Image 1 (spheres, rainbow, N blue to C red):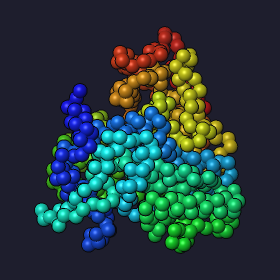
Image 2 (image 1 turned 90 degrees about the vertical axis):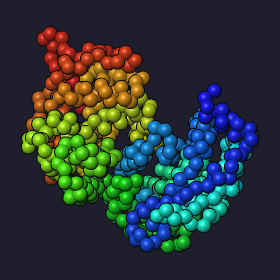
Image 3 (image 1 turned 120 degrees about the vertical axis):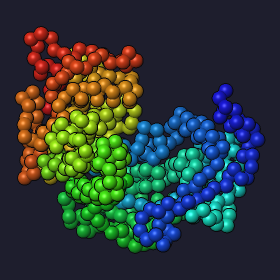
Image 4 (image 1 turned 60 degrees about the vertical axis):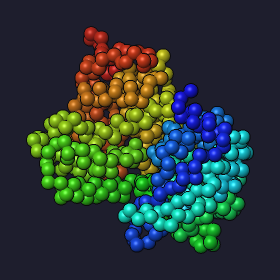
Length: 548
């Protein structure tokens, strides 16, 4: 038995933590934004005992396994769960909206906001829900002891406040706390009959298709049921932060309906809303988000060059990869642009940064090779492919909560063409939604995946790192140049044609140059077909699956 398991078993047998001091927490306030003089703008992250964290990790792993085996997790909860993330939540939500709009309906989304969600957890209610999930005996007693008699102090500039007893909530810096919160909030949609309730931890939204005014009444009734749930569970909403975004072309329906908060105030409709760090627009465009991240990345780049006098490669690339590039790539599989203007704006930030590094060529293509960097465009394509592969391998949830929207394979690894994904038919997509659908993962992501060599597409039962290694080896063998619509290689029979004023780019990269440089995969990866190079006299087009 491993050491953590031994001490955990001893702790379970005694059903207590050895010392009250081990349940004490120090709270260094973390500023969230806004006025620094207001206490409400600080996040109380707790510094807890490392010894207790060892116990917590063992208990968490056992609880997670129990809940997974019994399908006790809320399927629409993406926070703090293996294989799920902000990206998987956003992909599911956005694809569901586009699918409903393609059917000709409106869609209303109400964003809810809990007040101090992690600090308001009622211990008795939580323990009752644990028991309902058949978590009892010594484990339940241990968790009960973990929650009670906790003490916390605020620490600022080395000064400690007077100790105070914690009577509700879980420490935000603990290992077990997030899982306990998921258990508490897991039944929030049990009595919801019409709306789709999706969450990332406490960030919750209610989505409802709108065909008539009756649908708005049904959504409001579901909101009332959520308000009742919050009262029954001693959770409070911050009503002033509720937001409503309305999608669709039926303006009359939008103007004739509205929704109210628990305080009986009308929820204001807005054209944009910040959802898990992404600016969502009511026309399903990400123009505002791209503008925001470009400006943020430019400001961060300027700060780096103002603050650090060095222009050497190592420190500047470390700063760039840590502070600038993440701003330009966060959840890019959701908003990956396909227009010339957007791609140029994004790429311009990286171009401007790398040209200031000593000894780096002024030619962007050469600079990328010197720095061993992908262009931002190539990086986004890579993320899309990785996400599609993880979905069809079952590593992450598929894109949508409805079967009609999931990514599926149309041929498997035993097929002569290898494994390929079913691509989205755009014939029934309204013109105003065409761009949004074209840049979605179900359309753009699957097409990029289908353009890969057969050996890579057929890779299955492999680790994520192993697939990344194979994919990167292939991508490095292809010249990383900006397509920007300037060229259309003859072997890519793209069917993406602009149907409105803004030019839409064809699917870039995926040219078969350098394919022969790919070696066979690691022995622990199952690949149905390892042939990569064409036989003598065989056309290269055979290697590129035609999927349009």
